[in-house]
Image 1 (cartoon, rainbow, N blue to C red):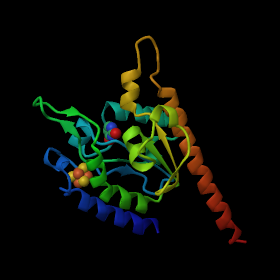
Image 2: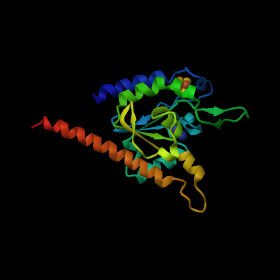
Image 3: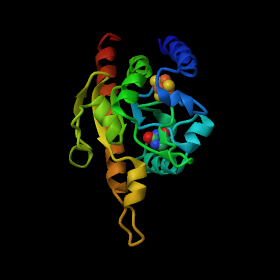
Image 4: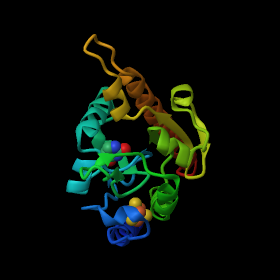
Length: 215
Ligand code: URA
Ligand code: SF4
């Protein structure tokens, strides 16, 4: 079954790579579809590609991505064990000054890109979704999501048994101070650990039920 879903995921990726459904298509270098273990019980959904991601076609490979990798390691999970994608698959930036300045995707852009995110999550069928940052939580959990108050809590979600949100690593980088404030890094690690443990427990529960039929 995993093989069939993987093939379907590849074909979805191929279609997404040539998407021109919203204005972000005009300035992008690469569509960043997502990567990782498609059989993972945990899927991370970030905000959207930045410069490095746009250049490489891979999610979370810039400065924020490096912090996220470290947090995944510190949570005892590791990047290789999850699947990572984004709310929008093309870089959102303002070009008014001539140089791109990254910005959050608009509601219209996020809505347009659901044409990829929804079937993608449908095929991945994760037990738990970890929304990385407020735009992702607003897109997948509820419009009024308040990241500082509601991060780390379980919410119902149409695409998984539950969804949890955490701080965005770019936000954490901005909050960190030379004086030693971790900017919320510890909270991010705790949220990742919580999401992974929940995903693992849900997988174990399923195996338990399946094993009833083996005897
Ligand atoms: N920030 C995101 O939200 N996603 C990425 O892929 C990179 C940076
Ligand atoms: Fe298509 Fe999404 Fe890129 Fe917009 S952001 S062009 S909807 S892939």
